[in-house]
Image 1 (cartoon, one colour):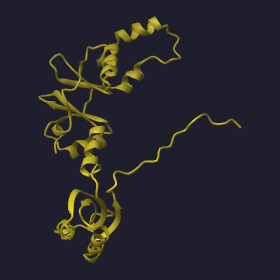
Image 2 (cartoon, helix red, strand yellow):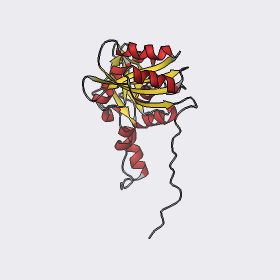
Image 3 (cartoon, rainbow, N blue to C red):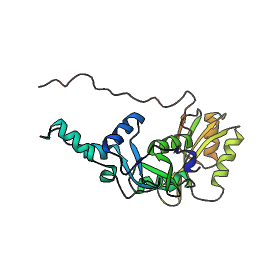
Image 4 (tube, helix red, strand yellow):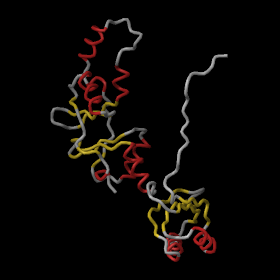
Length: 233
């Protein structure tokens, strides 16, 4: 899967000469938190996130009048507040590489460019949605977590056991284990009887760490809500 399959196409942009007030109004109107900045030729030259605009705004403790504040902000341009060093990728970037770059550079989004012009944007929310899809987060079934030793045919052996019980694999993902020889495999299966499948996996020397039946739907979260004020002692 490539970023072009999950990006938001045709992102909202403004020029580096756009005013602070115009950018802030646009972000509120479009309900976005990131705004790629382009030059007159439409090429990416910077990016502004919502917190950049908030940090550029005068403090509530300022002695300036509302008219002075308005005047100062009207003179502020995007080139004065934007981040000028932008990490961007092309449309053919694999989704996992986009996620890695966001982690490595500690950023919440990646502009997608073609000939240095923004054609899309992908955010951490898009990555989370893809992660849910990869792990079958919205799929019902038996969710198994296995600790396997790195080697040829390991996944084929596990899949063979599942197939013997008429099981259908709806999602599969691998994660790093305790060391370089270990892999943690998460697989979601439908159609296979739980106890019989677990017994067969055990007989095949597959180490099952966890087995959760998700046939009734997704995990129900605990909602913790603070109501009222703390009583003063």
